[in-house]
Length: 208
Image: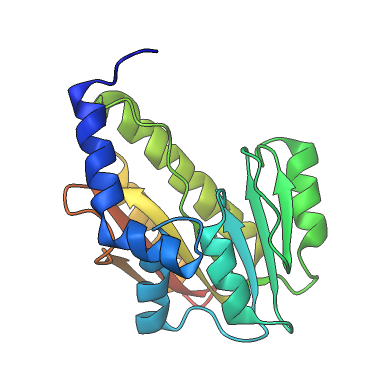
């Protein structure tokens, strides 16, 4: 069996001692990422009973779990990811790359005629540790999420998209402000302090 590197050993030690990881396990959530969405939703009131939500990059499913509980039986959660995701009651899942027409078509077919209330995206690439590689990949995913939001949101809908500061960041924020009445950047407490991730919160789609 291959020996773990010191860095991977430190990561595992930090991961399993992380209070958010422990809390997620205790409460039955699929990942610690749920607490990022929970904090933002608590402050910003993104989700509500009866809402329709599209969750991009959903696997392993913690955000979809949370969204389904918030929208309730009268709402809907549509989720998509390239990776497989174990089923969640009340969540409609499409596996595949939504840049591909058949997958995009499956997602759009699930979207109600009036559109969705909220688009969520916690998408991130597999990080190499090389900023010149990781940043363009990260921005590309954020741009894809913003484009999808523009296609499926209801008027006055909202989007929450993971972003990383760096090349292309300001352009993405500017593009968001052309689409939404209110745009701001938030960093929830559950985001690791060393992580460059932020969340772009955009409200009031089409009200610019």
